[in-house]
Length: 382
Image 1 (tube, helix red, strand yellow):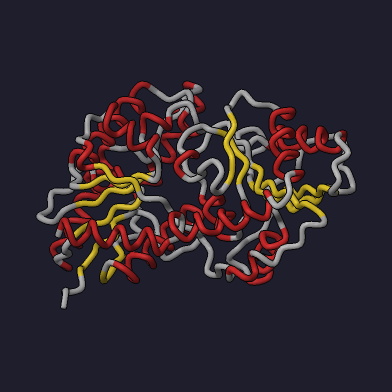
Image 2: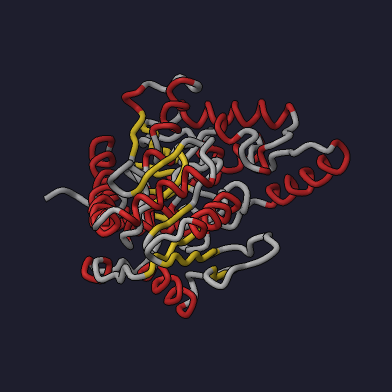
């Protein structure tokens, strides 16, 4: 009988809190416990210097107009080193699992292998998210340096997309044999039964937009596509729901529902989310940029084929014809309306997509498949 591996979960954040990284930290921990071994929680750990860094960030923005990355700090990296090395000595883990913790493991000097997981690299963050635009020269150099140290210090790198893995290999010169691609799972405690998924009604087609950023998530394109679909007089009525924001448009049609926010950690809100997912037929999020959205894993669990954009890491979570379709980033409302019209109008196409989407989830986008692959890697390295 194989002995249970001891895994030190390294992060400065709280992996027991479902609000951390949209729940990904929590569900990774639970999957590790189920499939890979005993998990020792190294976080949360936020030294006082972290709050000093936040003050420096504000002063820098005020005096220079530029962004200062408070989390990518040399001093912080050494504070993390001393803290987590003490935990290694105390617990003697077989392996370290670092979840989105490049700074935390960048200077660790330990005798056990480090598995370093991310959904993106520092290089790919630049000018794609608000906090990573208009950076100071010092922040750019330090961020790249810490990322390189972190990758070099790791026995294995795990990414959720080929896009991010390619960056680690090409930009940071990490050997391909040290890089692994493993998809995330659905961040929900309750996965619907297959019978629930396949019991949908198709007399009215419910399209769901899920996101909090109107432009980056393509909310404007969703709205324009919906207007275009209304002009086409399709046989079936189409209803659109915006979840996560209030659309900044002048008028809202009667067949549009707006749900500004649901907190899935609250029972009432989770039940509303669960019912909404079961009643929806298509998830439509034409992102301008994204890594590998957890919402797409969740949609697949509910049998919702995903209509999105072939940008960033999305093609590693949405496979054309299996659990959705991707269009080029240049595509507009007409192209998306053509695609959706075709899916709705062809006999049984949407029903068949519902089936294949759930199948794809079970094979590729569940936390069980993630945990089983992590377990294999843990056993191989330790």
